[in-house]
Image 1 (cartoon, helix red, strand yellow):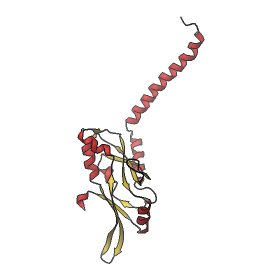
Image 2 (spheres, rainbow, N blue to C red):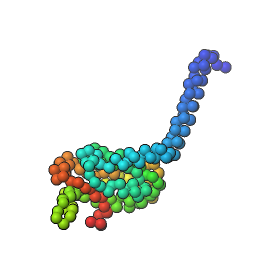
Image 3 (cartoon, one colour):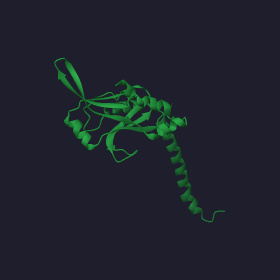
Image 4 (tube, one colour):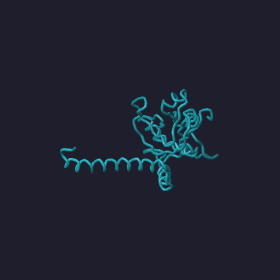
Length: 190
């Protein structure tokens, strides 16, 4: 027998509210996991503009080919400190997996874009000429290589970051050379 019945009047509604909230939270997560056409369209519109952060937003590039592969969506891009391995800065893209895939498959896909070249384009008598101004590599998290050995999978909806190293002096040099195009390609394609 409960010696303080008034305490039940306080606790019972709280427990009911907590149970309702927990169900609502699960339902919310389930509905977020199911992609609605409107949400997908909003993501697509946002990703169209999420290629390069300032001061490089004007650059022509083929980074959108990562999305055209059908396996990833570009959610965000920013110039920030690289957290994976050092204090350097770089351009970071946040990707979301659109399909389940093995880490081996992820590495193959990203290696197609591994070699990054910055070009300035000059109009010459014989047409448009591209002059290489800077080169670097596209990096991805180290857990991708480690996961290959263990046959791990990247699940649909998982977010990951890829990046290129660019410190402040490299950015000043690229801007001074008036670079207009960045090409992501497989190293063997060069």
